[in-house]
Image 1 (cartoon, helix red, strand yellow):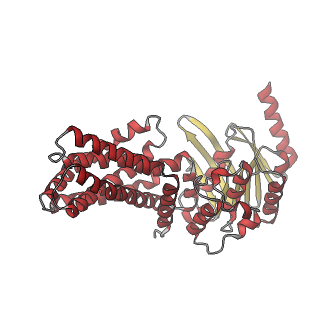
Image 2: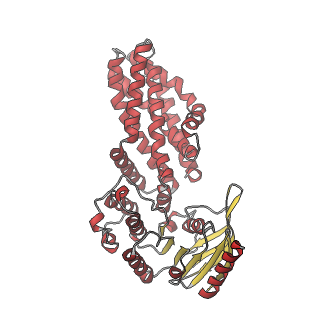
Image 3: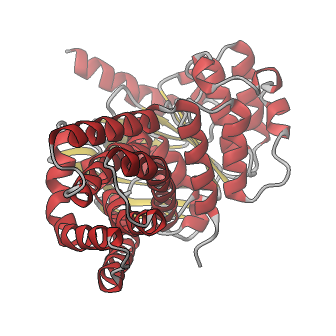
Length: 220
Length: 211
């Protein structure tokens, strides 16, 4: 169970997310326009950022305080978090060592990265960078997957691979996106606007309505 | 219990450093230029201890801060935080920087020894400089994350560092000067090692707030 209870995150005077509450077991699509607070919420859920107030629980523990829980979370953000001077293989090997994994190169086949494994990360296209980031996130068989704009910059093949990963993943998934089609992969929906929750529920159509209402509100 | 993950971080840092060579080249170039200029302009045999400390201190600021700041600039720190405890990250950075500064000392000491026309015990001078570089490297590692997001980072880091590093300057100079006379000043060495231990402990305690 993933629980987010009255969570706020402030950078200086500005709130990136404010009083956000929800809980889910299977999958959650977080929708919102740019600056809605989706990425901040993803990092809070992963324990990379600490909330200014409120409580986050992943499998009963606070991820920002418990590294054991963080190690069970696979996260992909729009920033690949890879070392540009190292090759794909060296990057993945480094992260596999942090997990103490003996076998990790199956992710090269899973993400179709075998051909690029000797290439420096700085030489890869944006789409392949994203594939390496996904490989890093799933290599240790995480129990909770956080995908923040993970589909962005992926080509058709990359999208197909990621969709398969999502469909076959057994644990909870947090999928932040502004693409409505991608959101359909999830069972719960959360709509954020300026850091606040405007909709949380199981209806995709209602989530879209709230999202469109916000769009029209901001245009008028 | 802290796992040995920090050793993986050390290996990775050294590999990145060896691959990019940016800060090592910068550090060596700066160290050798400074040593050469000082050797021409002042009585370097008389003031060699002061010059060596300045060279090691300023060169270390360049290289040690780079290993930490790079993680923030490339946002790879978030990837590390996903898998590692803040203390493990800090321990890894401390060891990486120690090795980089030791490399500097290994290269710079014989060059300065020849450049400054020194005639004392080389091995003693080398050991003394290694001991003096310990607290310097650890203190810079402690301060670097604080300056990572600052606009005038290059100016801010030395300004923040100076009051913290001040207590070790006199014992470092004493240790190096006495080594030239063939004496290993144990009192200064103990003080420097204790100060390094204090800074390392402080770094680990504060790591949760720094990363």
